[in-house]
Length: 120
Image (spheres, rainbow, N blue to C red):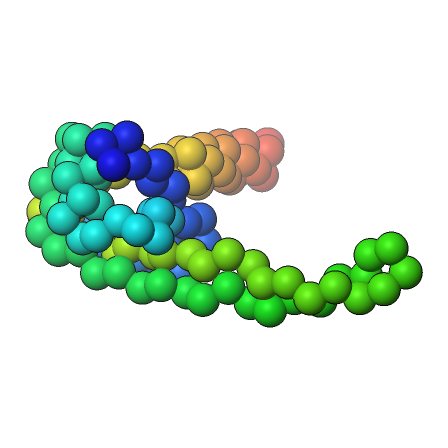
């Protein structure tokens, strides 16, 4: 499991948690906490303090195929809540933060331009 696939979960709630140093990641269901901590440390070069895991059971689904209904189940998903050492961070939401900074910068420019127009 040295080449474990780790995906960050992208939502408003996980973004809010990432500001306090807790990142939510999708991990394989057979991975344990020690393996998750090692994989995160190797992949992102950070220090992991704590790992909490939750396994979400797959939902039962029913679909219509070939003129009849078929029952099925979605696969299980395991989430890992990884807390990093203070000062460490993972650039998961870097694009969102850059976009917010750019929007704020353009707002300031627009306000400045409006003030100039007002003076004339």
